[in-house]
Image (tube, rainbow, N blue to C red; front, side, top):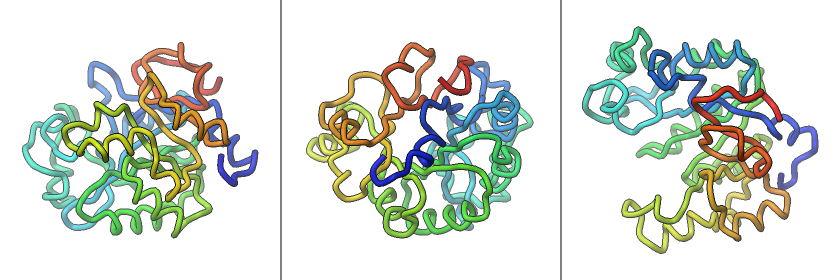
Length: 248
């Protein structure tokens, strides 16, 4: 990691992080649910999760910008209040969209945690509120985002927190991003600005520009493997739908 001690690196190095908690492929334990984080805690895994804002400014744990896929309701998460969201079922189960504070209480520092901040229209507010919550959390954690400017916000405002840049292959950014922007993002060329301690890259071919950063001390995480075959190639794994050893 850039400017990190070996002790800080060891908190995350060669850990397996349950992607959105230890959810199940049959959806009986939904992603980003309290049940998923309880299962991860009991299995001894680190966890990865996603945070974003409700209409009335609460930090909740939910991945998609829209509710359609997971709840069957139509619309953006940030168009609904917390009260409205907590009445929505996750995949038809008894689980509902949890507050970030509820997840932290449930997981209770059982292992290291990767917190992804989602991009939205109120990024600064999300950063400020997420940081305020994390400052009271006693467990080990780091933050990450696909948005390099969110990562940079933490570099400026919370430089003590380990931070990561999420990235994926060039074609995955299209057509949502213009080609030049997709190229820059896929190569993590904004690292000169936000100076990530790790890059979490979609498992597969890693561009030489990203590998070069790893050669200079930036950790490389993989998302989202479905088996342990890639452990030899990455410094940490954000996995789903299999049961690896908690560390490797």
